Length: 279
Ligand code: C2E
Ligand code: CA
Ligand code: CA
Ligand code: CA
Image (spheres, protein in one colour):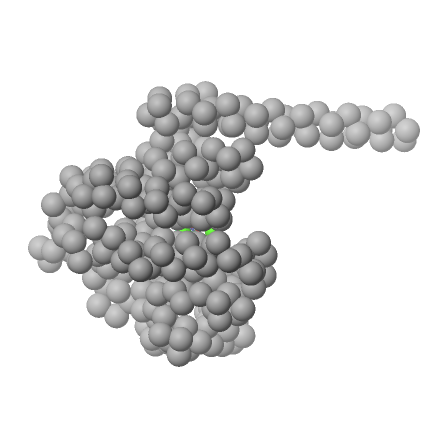
C-alpha cells in the first residue's frame, strides 16, 4: 500500500510537470507566433433570430503551433494573459480583422459589425483606447464596422479605468457586448454600472433552455431584463432547432451557434455572405 501511494505521488508529480512544461512551451511559442505567421482568425456569423439574415460575425483566434498542432484559445489565451503577451496577440487580432475587412467587398460600412474579444488585461492597459484607434484609423476601418466583447469578472467591480475605457470606445462609435452573461460574479451590478449595447447569454444557459422548465424560465427572464435595459440579446451556442424555435418565441434578437454556422475561415465567411445576399 505504501509503495502504491508513493507511485501515485510520483505519477501526480510527473503529470504536473507535463502540464507545466506544456505551458512553458506555449508561452515560448507565442513569443514567435505572430512573426512566424502561425495565428489566423475564423469568423462565426451572428444571425437575426427572426429573419435568419447575417448581422455580423465574431472573430475567433486560431493558432497552428509547428509541433503541437492546433492549440485552442481556451488553452493559450489564459497563458498569454498571465504572461502579458495578450497585449501583442490582441493587437494582432485587431490588425488582422481590419486587414480582412478592407479586402472584403461584401462587408459594407454600416451593414454589419465584426466583434472582437477583448481580454480584461487588454481593457485595463492604459493605452488600450489609443491603440485601438491608431490601428483602425491606420487601416481606414470606421468604428461602425467593429464591436468588442468583454467578460465580467470580479476584478471588474469598481474598476474606474475599465469604465472610462468602455465609455471612450463607445463615444468613438464602437459598440460593446457583455460576453458569457450569467457566468460571472457580478452580472447584475455590472449592468447597473455599464451601458452596453449587447448581452450574450452564455452557452451553458442555452444548453439547458429546452431541457427543463427552469432552464426556459431563466433565459426568458434574462431576455426581458436585457430588453428592459435597451440591450440586444445574443444567444450563444445554439445547437438544436428546438432551441432556435424557443428563442424566437422568447423574442431573442440574435443567435450564434453550430446549428446555423460554425466558425469559418475568412474566404468561407465571405462566400456565405455572398450566398445570403444572392438568396
Ligand atoms: P467565447 O468568446 O465565449 O467564444 C465562443 C466559443 O464557443 C468559441 O470557442 C466557439 O467556437 C464556440 N462555439 C460557438 N458556437 C458553439 C456551439 O454551438 N457549440 C459549442 N459547443 N461551442 C460553440 P473558441 O473559438 O475555442 O474560443 C474559446 C474562447 O477563447 C472564447 O470564448 C474567448 O473567450 C477566447 N478567445 C477566442 N478568440 C479570442 C481573441 O481573439 N481574443 C481573446 N482575448 N480571447 C479569444
Ligand atoms: Ca466572445
Ligand atoms: Ca461567449
Ligand atoms: Ca467563453
